[in-house]
Length: 429
Image (cartoon, rainbow, N blue to C red; front, side, top):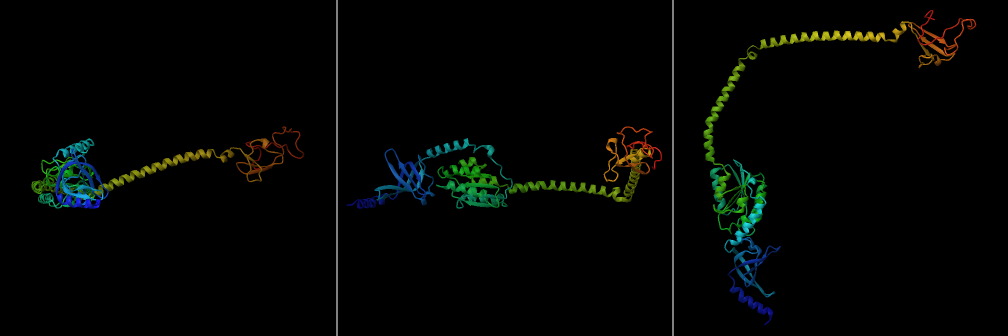
């Protein structure tokens, strides 16, 4: 008999005999393959059994397998002839008791609490009158029906968007977390998110104790109400949510206002509002009557006449003020003109002084201030108070003073012509 023949006979004998078995043990060596299959081992004190959960079965498990978890599994044995080995193909998996799950829950709770995810100061208030809410749950469960019925009775004006997600089994936590993120970014936006699920065992509600879901609730920009399980069930989702509801029905109650209570309040407020409006109208009527009886409306001509007299009086005052200012300005102008006239070069010339300019033939002749500035034979122009005199320099004051008895032949002895000297004789010379 060949090896393959023996392996085939073993396969034919073993697989039909162990097609429906329950196996209890501790999970170890969990490997999640990229294909989606989960490979693991079940062990006790004396033996180890290899096992596999195929990708299509993973999402149907009550809990996701983890190392160290005591479980009881249902499945069938399958022989793999190429390796001469056998393994348990698991289709159902449950925790044995709650000790292992509770230990994991306590560890995760302590770690998340140390990060402040359950702190009271993180809690946000719910809108008093929400107009649009999102519900994350399984659309096939009874929880959504109870929630919608309660909401319709209390506040039917609110729009509800159901974001579907599995609420039990392996991968449910990640699916609910994704649904919360989707609900927080709906368009148009929602004002509150409700995460609800009906009651069950710790194993059934385990998805709401897993870290991805808890962190998704904490990261939601929209307030979250958690209504998971019955009154006695407390999950980490309840602790991290902004509001914890005891049940899905209680979640609807906490989100919505009571329509009947609001109608009763409106009925009480209506008489007060009517009285307030009547009082406001009476006050407005009194003000209107006072305005109608005022002089501005009954005798507007008197008001105009009074204003006209005031305008005339102020116009007269303005005219007097302008005349005074103009007179004072004229006096100041005359005083300044007198000072300017007194300092005028023409006034200086009228008192007997003269100005002598050299180079009289050029356009830029300069006034003579020093006798050393002129030379014999140079032409000069002398400006008098009345008229001008042109002359030629014969001798300057820098030369020796001429004697009276030694004049030039045929002429009287001339006097030096300098700037600023008072002229003698005929001023027209």
